[in-house]
Image (cartoon, rainbow, N blue to C red; front, side, top):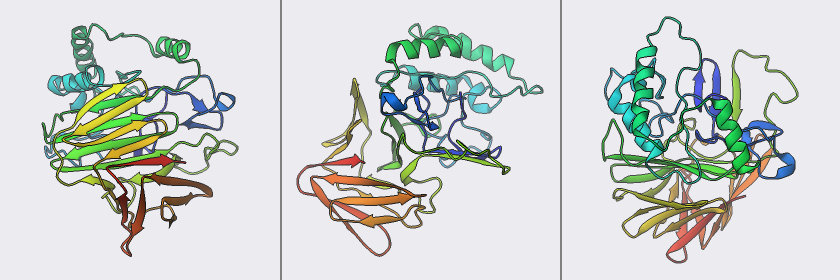
Length: 337
């Protein structure tokens, strides 16, 4: 089990990882799912703490109540994990909404918190889970054995669908899609729908401390960024729509489809298909060099090259760094290569 995604928390930064659900890591990088059998470490990795799919990414940005401080997780030491209404929202989001092949939540603390009153809220969480008869409550080692036996070293596609928000009601939705090739987070705040995170997974990418120990006070684990609105100075992300209505979500096997009106975003391991949408990608201050071509954006991050390929349209750009998607028809597909 490893930390959730976070920025400079207790000297650890982990950005662009597989959101919440288990995965089989690359032999070269515990933070990156493997995509081939020969590079797979056949031990499932779990993310700790029960991350909030709406607020864990950029904590407190959309929370106006000053009483809610700390990490946006199920940890009983924080107000989020000790409030029964919010805990119910967590469980409904994880276990009742679309999750594709697997769903999971971690209960408890990542350390002892010896002076904190954690027992009563933890008991509350366990008691509440009695209302979810399809959920197994078990040790992580047992979950790992079941996951390993069921998926046999191949990371399945998974989703986490927050169709409402405990802090903003129907005004905010956040859906994560994970697969062995990439992670994406689509979010709607009011009428603005956008990708706030899109990271490529490359099983050949070596983690920074694979061959040498970390000798600094902090540590960094990361994947390959295409969209990032928490680390990059520009927080715009990939803007899909500025007149969005509430999302509906459906899924089957490895495919997740998010619809609003006649517009939709469909996620598969092969890429993202957008219907009746012409996105804009804001790149001002992006921390990765990029070259604009007619139908692909070429990135080079810390010596690793990769591309965002546009099928069914072309790219254009302006001096301020925004990239415009120009569809040829009603659908375009983004391939992460």
